[in-house]
Image (cartoon, rainbow, N blue to C red; front, side, top):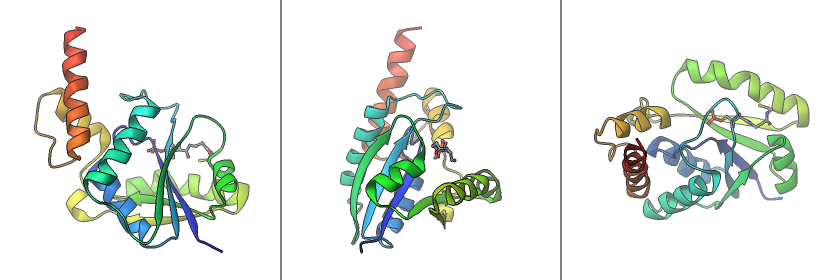
Length: 170
Ligand code: PNS
């Protein structure tokens, strides 16, 4: 039976930190689903479709692969564990930078295990990416700072365009 995992998140947009976690998870499983999930607590900069495209472009640009077959998908409603059941995944992958991330993730991991027996595999962030988050990258981009160290070229280009469009709209 193939080992199948889901790596969920807002990915608004995907960063080099997320891509590092995806690459390392791809070494652990036969199949990895990178899943864009709508988080009602956050107002997204990019649509789900745009985020999926940016993830695909970033995976290709950085040649992220591994033994795993990687697919990119969206979940626009419903429980994450239902998506896991649908694709036969028995594990979720989450990256964490500090204990703050773990405090946020732990109850979700416990609920997902409670609901459907889906385990969460936590992968520690590479310290190189320890300070990188989607929200900080958006803030730096909005203030016209350099974001190339934190995201793929595809994402840097999309963010620069979105900042220009927002400015043009006042
Ligand atoms: O990148 P984020 O915003 O921290 O990701 C959080 C996310 C989207 C993974 C989380 O909100 C989630 O799992 N949502 C799916 C809805 C769900 O199944 N909720 C119940 C168990 S947590």
